[in-house]
Amino acid sequence: MGDSPFYYDWESLQLGGMIFGGLLCIAGILIALSGKCKCKYNQKHSPLPEKATPLITPGSASTC
Image 1: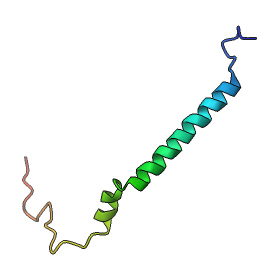
Image 2 (image 1 turned 90 degrees about the vertical axis):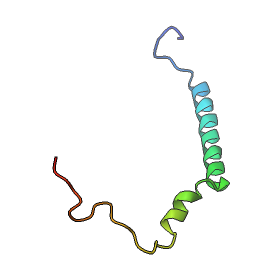
Image 3 (image 1 turned 90 degrees about the horizontal axis):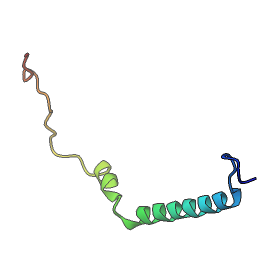
């Protein structure tokens, strides 16, 4: 039965998948709780600057 190229050891495949999924889950929880992802959160909720300068002002565009 192991001669077919489409034969898989499903028990080993399931066990490896569960271990891999568990490690990814633990890594995701550790990253979320580490505090290194708070930079995006702080930028969204930071107070607005006094006056934002527009990147393109009227008349500043030049034709090539």
